[in-house]
Image (tube, rainbow, N blue to C red; front, side):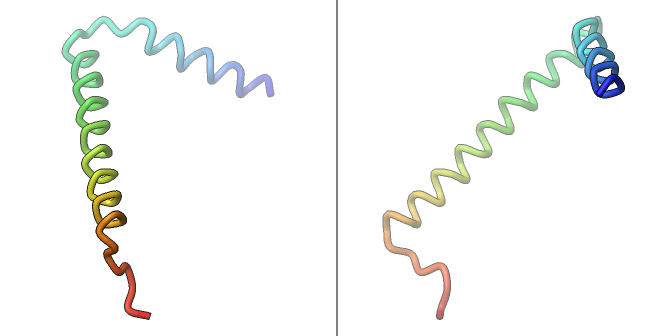
Length: 58
């Protein structure tokens, strides 16, 4: 448990002290891109569900 707390503190301290703004903003851009792609997948799945798409031929 002590090791877990130590690793957690190192991780949090590392990201708290990011001084490279390019890296910081690229993480933010990647996060928004990931959220947008997930929304597209969720939309496609719900669209197929609502139009009675057969997912298998059993």
